[in-house]
Length: 213
Image (tube, rainbow, N blue to C red; front, side, top):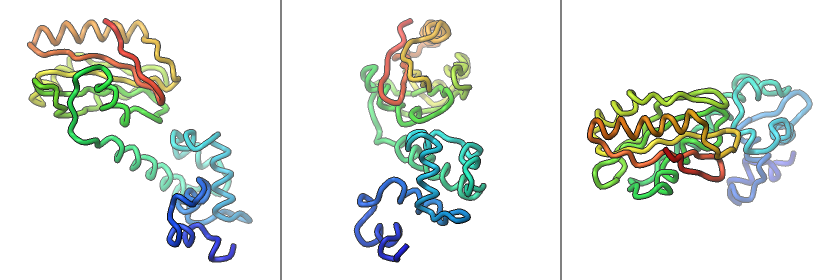
């Protein structure tokens, strides 16, 4: 590939927005495989995962099933997507005044995951976010929401109110019986210790829904 057509040179001369996804991924890979340049290998990898969203969800072992992708390349890709999620999950200090605010605060921590994650959002008496804490990680269709641990997290963080959120990797917004149960239990536990329970929401990659209980 002529130097002027190489992704690195094009990025430096005209900017990252001018590059295709496969070219940006090729820069992360650094090199190709046997008989394949980096751009071709990047194309194979994206196709293997279905699309860019599928690539973002993939673990290292799935990436390493593509010929030419070893541990170093797989780790580099996973680390890059994780850094993006970390950057997106650090919004400016926000205030939770409704269910939509709660969903917006936690969405960056729950999108593009292949497993369920439960996040507690701790707020002060005015609804300002003090802390967002991951309280549980689970499988592809279930994660435990430990009521005692959630309440303890709120109290030790100096919070006066809190909300709960978890994701559904399947994309379904329908609450399970366990979702309804934990919502009711959290509401009761909050009243017992003098906390305000704001809400419980389910978040997917494209939408959210509150869990009544």
